[in-house]
Image (cartoon, rainbow, N blue to C red; front, side, top):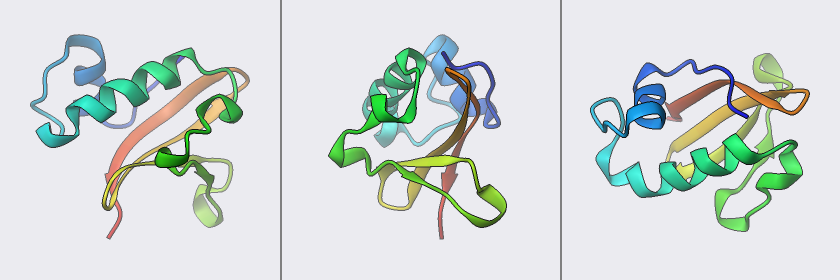
Length: 92
């Protein structure tokens, strides 16, 4: 279950469907990814090849990232079976 967000626009999209804080072109894919994250209990539950799930290192060690499109990623970590600190970022 998703317990916390870093990105307020992504949180608003998850809770109400408003696209004001996200890239509208990403809405369909984000809806699918958020539903999967909300139901996931472990990273293995998110192992769809097109999402390119991978663990991060360095200052983001312990976090995972999934590709939304091009440079856009969802970044999060698991705390037990919960997803927390969910962020929507543009890698440059």
